[in-house]
Length: 319
Length: 279
Image 1 (cartoon, one colour):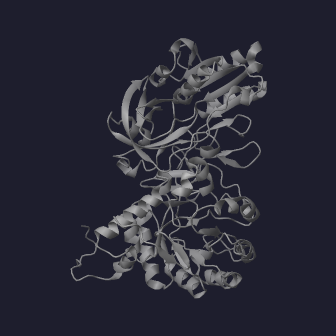
Image 2 (image 1 turned 180 degrees about the horizontal axis):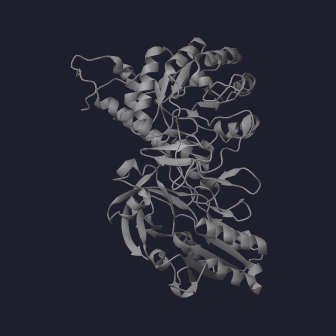
Image 3 (image 1 turned 45 degrees about the vertical axis):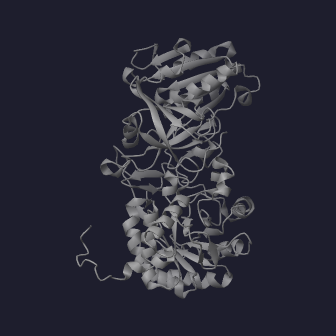
């Protein structure tokens, strides 16, 4: 088996193509649980922080989870220490990780988004920022990630504030390609998708929603086919790198996302089932690449859209 | 607390025996460290995890009920009761089959003197499947020479397992159907004990259904008796990643039970009746 191939992602040097999805791996908590083994065998080639917001948030009341067929609805509500708490308390600990740090930020107004970017971006420990735009802009009432115009306006504001790479996390709850094109035109360095799918669950034996936050986001293998389709569509539309995610649990899934056009992939919910999933997926991906006789995972990128001569015409037929 | 190896590992089931309607599992963890009493593991079967309707999907959290060094590794004991797709699948595992183990995880019990400087002994209060972590804790307390009383309660005969994990002669039982010991709640037994002169010198440790834990919490707070609860909340991961197992704190806000518990001081939480637990 070949070693996982290193790659470059909008200026970041990654030792392999597998990173984590924001909010699916708390490296600080994990260091307490697994000790220094977490640093010597860190599962991901870059670390994306949980989303931070301008002010501290406690998160949603429980219950926060609902298991679905092959997946999970979460309604966590972005608990975090806020910008100041993050910079003082979390950032020094995250700086000890052996991989580049990508900080995920979210706000509900342009001013607050700018405050986050201006607060996080100058810190040397931060390699890149990910903009979580699956939130409403309180000034317009529109969800930024569901409106190309809103997304373009946000990038227009934030792009001049930092030299560091800006990755935009796209929501699957709206047609993602127009938003991807808008943020690319606005100067985004990469896009990542998919975020979770809006979903809910009925409380057992009673009326009403199960989740304390009423609605949540679906993730896990249940969303993989949707994610793969959206990644392929976005990768076809834009020329900036795409970070693909959604139900990736094995190396073969990661290779599928790369074939669909992803430069890198993220493992999210699978880490809940296996804390070492990121490293395992990277190993399995390298083995898949070898077994396929490919030079590297990158050699497979985008091949999904190229119809081969022996491709069956009936696309609805499963093998 | 004992640190867990990074990642899940495949372990062999060496025992699956019936015990009062529950199953006692023994798992040979060839590489794992010995857990501290009160810690837990996330368990999932190697095969058939995700059956009818695509569930179970996530691993399930189980308190360690016993642990003993065996052949370079450690034998872990768990108490399992099938109440849903995950626990049903686990309960059906046969000896020799394998399961995924992540752990040991979480913060376990504090010694009586850590809870209360003048504590002279321990009172363990267990209910139903919640007797599991008290079995390993009792063994540690005995080894340390701590006077320990054990009160266990069950709803009915069909759900009264895990006694085999204890030395029965020292246990005071309660059952709601009256099939064994006091007819009523285990908290009735605790209330009587706490009336006694030595109540103020005891530390109480409890694990059981949310309503029982809340009753124990209220009793101990009222009588100013030091108390730790081994709590339950729906856990997605067990190591602080998913933020699912939120438990409301008395001081406001939430904690993640998997990394700040599952054993918590009774006065630290707002309630033991956490929405979503028991499912």
